[in-house]
Length: 319
Ligand code: 8YV
Image 1: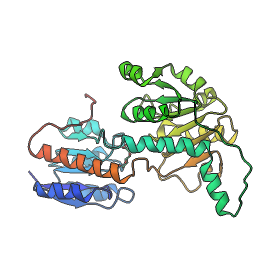
Image 2 (image 1 turned 90 degrees about the vertical axis):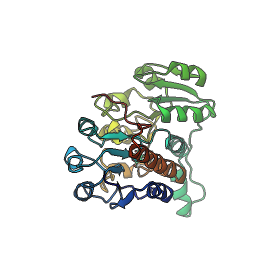
Image 3 (image 1 turned 30 degrees about the horizontal axis):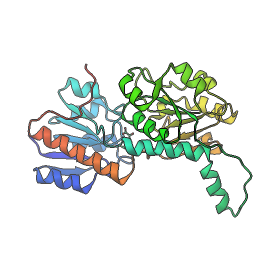
C-alpha cells in the first residue's frame, strides 16, 4: 500500500500534516482548492492511497486514475461535487468532516441575518465615504420568526443561536427529528407554512436532485415581502436569476449569500448592484477553529484507514 496522501485544501492544518507524518504517511499538496485543475489532481492521485479534497469537483475520470486510492476524505460536509457513487462502486470510502464545521457555518448564518437586517455593509461603506448620518431604517431580529430548512447539525446549531433572540423557530426537513424539536422548542411545519410565516429563512439542506433549485420563483413569491433569505449551504439550492428578480423588485426583504450557482461569482453578476443583499465568498466554515478540526478529522480518518479500522464519518448513502 502506498503511503502518499494527496491534499488540496491549502488550509489543511500543520498539526494534521504532523499527525499524518508521525503515522508514516507522506503528505503531498496540490495547488490550493480555488486554483487546482482536474488535470493536476489526475497526475498526482495516481500513486496516492488517500485524497483530501476541498470543494473542487472530483469526477469519476479523476477518481479512476487513483489505482491505489482507498479513501477520499472530504474537507467539509457537502459531497455534491464528488462522484461518490463511482467511488463507492469501486470500493473507495468517502468520508466527510461531520461535526467539525457546523459552529462556524451557524455563526455565519447568524452574521448574515444580522448584516442584512441591520444593513451593516451599507453603513460600513457609508462611514468610509465620509457620511455620518445615512437615513435608512433597519430591522431588529428580536422576537422574529426564523424558518430553518434542513435540520442536520448546522440547522440545529442555527436554531440554538436564534433561540437567544427569543425567535419563534419553524423548521422543514424531509426527515424531521421530533425529539430534538421538542427539546429545542422548534416546530416542524410544511414548506408552505414556513415560507408564509418566516421573517428569516435559512437554508441548511444538502444539494441533491430533490433540493436542486428548491428556491425558485414560486418559493420566493410565497415568502413575506419583508423576509430575508440566508444561504450558507449550496448555491444550486437557489435559482439565482429568480432571486435577483425578487430582490430587484423588492418582493422579498433581502438576502445574505455565501454560496452561488457558479463559484467564483461572476464579476458581471447583477447581484453586486443590489443594496438588499450581503455577499460573502463561500467562507462560512473558514475559521481557524473549524479548519483545524476539519484537518485533524481528515487525518484521523486516513490513519484509521491505514490501520484497517472502519471510518467514523463515511457518507451515509447506500448504492
Ligand atoms: C468547506 C463546505 O469549508 O463543508 C462544506 O461542504 O461547503 C465548506 O464549509 C469548503 O467546501 C472547503 O472544502
